[in-house]
Image 1 (tube, each protein chain N blue to C red):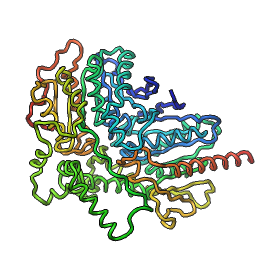
Image 2 (cartoon, chains in turn green, purple):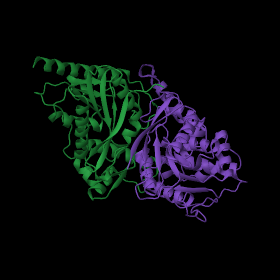
Image 3 (cartoon, each protein chain N blue to C red):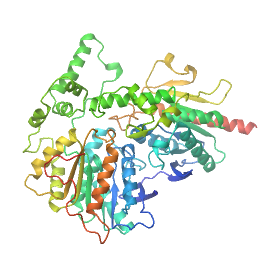
Image 4 (spheres, rainbow over the protein chains, first blue to last red):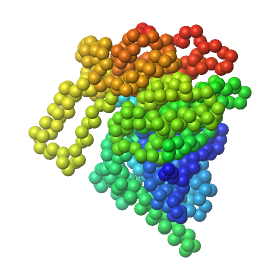
Length: 276
Length: 329
């Protein structure tokens, strides 16, 4: 039986429990990574790749912790009570657990989609070794609007949404305080409003710590968010966090780039600590 | 309450979540086991399996949700595409592991048996298991069961470099995309069940959709694409009287197929043990129209009717039993 050293568990988070899986590094730990995943149905579709990425890192000497936000997946809690601020608290709780589990090991935060937005906020005020972002939305509001676009498309295509409505109709519904089902999850006005002014908090110029944006749509270099700190890679479409026929898309370039970034960020922090 | 557990079977370490019965609630002697819906982790689409297990355990049914090899948190090989995984599931690829799992869970928790099911691929594996192990599998709940074999895999889009560049080639590509649907059984099935991009036409053009569906799927014979071993397993399960709950998204591909296959395969069999509901206004994964919540309600009600606590009687006639008439969602 081939089993990887992985420990699932629950972290107390208020009245709820956060589900996590700790992938233990094979051999000496050279870094630790907190994986901050995508939201709702994107988590579901992307799970296979996300878990394999965690194992890929662990086999190469990286401690990895991935977790589910409250109200999603194996974690407890009611989705309709969640906001971006609450999920940011979850990121911090998971980070605390990872740090306690791997004392002295530099920690990098790696976010995918919504996770990149939340991870960037946490990176801003925590002493972390690096920040890696895969396909970050430009803001929380833009992200939710993108998910609403998918809702409009699928409702119209499948004929399941009742009378034809636009994104603006859905927004008005949310603003009125009604719960709205999006990809099976009940969105609330509080969730919607929590995305207001929740932009992608890129590190400031005077922040010397390593950070990196990875665009997975193969866009030209001039369209990258921050040309000097970005990688543009083309992974198979539809993306693995949507309904895709590819279970195991070729992610070798992105995996290699991510591992290199994590290793360098960790080595840099260790060198600085050695000097001081 | 949720607890995590692991089970070692046939060389795999499977990870799962159990939902123990709350203290003070009389525990039933059968539990519920939820399998992975397709490639999706054990909580299900939008947490459908997790929510159902929470509700059932509050009623006294110990519940388990387990990731099969390669899925969710369980390590294991996986094919490259969902189409290949689908084929594997249709062929009963997860049956040996699941059989061992049922036995291990029953032994560990002192249960008389388990009721198995879930959405899509979970329904397929559960049907095979109910056929193979009628003593361990006391019932099945099938959400959007798929009784047909895999659709032909579409050719992958050619890599960027080899894509046709000329105007003529581009047009030829577009025409091929349309004609491949016009002359394809699956293309028509998807269109008629409102599951592909061209089905929007029906909003504007009157069309005898049902008549064409009937033509494509003769009511009295099994369609060519039927998964015959699965249909045979289903026949035996029904014949044996195993309680079965079937939920489908009304008018969608699996609903239409189930109807036809059921009529062709079970025309001469009594099936009072089959409870059938069509959920209106939803999709294959029950993520629209509040279908997730309705599915959970149907499941809990059905569980209480068929698997009562000791001392309670089985309901006289389960609500919604399928008899060929249309049932409310």
